[in-house]
Length: 311
Image (cartoon, rainbow, N blue to C red):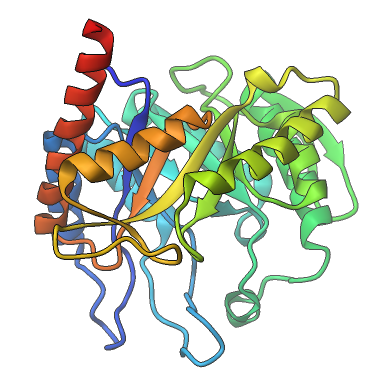
């Protein structure tokens, strides 16, 4: 059944504390297929080159996002595929637009292009990318990417990037390319979101996943839309939540959403009531059994929606 509240799942790419413990492609592919089978609406990858959980945690290895994304586009059939979010500082923006339109073609029009400015300085310096002026660089990159995907061409000469007489040819299945989602809370970035994006994302994994956090964030997004004369209703709101299925866990304000399937479904619906239309679920240790347990949550969510429609 079609859901008003879409639910996505973040696939694993990351090493654990043991070096070399990241899942193999065969495992990632298996979990993607399973997630489609149990009813997830979307599948997501993060975009890092190294990953750090904090100053006391050494950088961890991670598989490259876009290589996996192209493979998933070819091996999945139904779910939308998204980046949560792609760092525009890691790739030339015109090339990134070309990559996005190509994955859009491979997937048959299922890509959601999540974009962000990045934050983890260690991976920038390790791979030789400049870390300065991140928002300024992001703004120029976003203009190039959004214009190329929307119009198919651009002539741009900026402070950080150039794309002279650039064209996207051939084009993917959607004439204006995949929708753009931007994850941010900063004032400058929110303005750019209101100007160029189809949807906004709030990352609510750290510090707990609580629906009562949404009104304040929603107000920030609404204000950004008003500042550029955009109807706030035209900007979709999404949220990434920490969810750990299981009946033995107790809900904590700073912890994950947890409990039996019906309780988790009701907590997800609380975000819908706050205006969220697409949720991406993050789990601490994504495994096939986790996906199967979350399948029961999706069934409970569908029962709740069916009951609401009947009444």
